[in-house]
Image 1: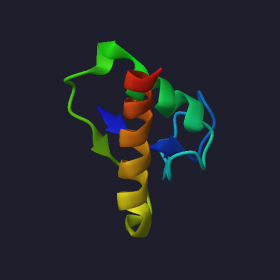
Image 2: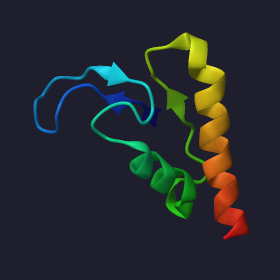
Image 3: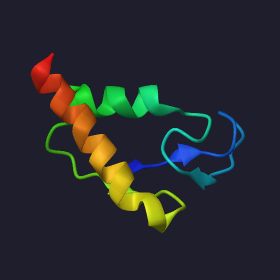
Amino acid sequence: MHLNDAKSTFGSRVDRHHSLGEGNIGHDAFRWIMQDDRFDGIPLILETINPDIWAEEIAWLKAQQTEKAVA
């Protein structure tokens, strides 16, 4: 599954990637994905626009998954 936020609005039929939490999808959707057991075992591909923060985005995603185990 490809993970990226969206520069475009829902239904625009335009696929413009953005950094996690910086677009129209927002952090809550990605937190939900990382905490939902139905997505366990599905390969995730980060497709965000800024390679300078990829490590930070990956760490944030992993932290959201860890919160599931703590909650």
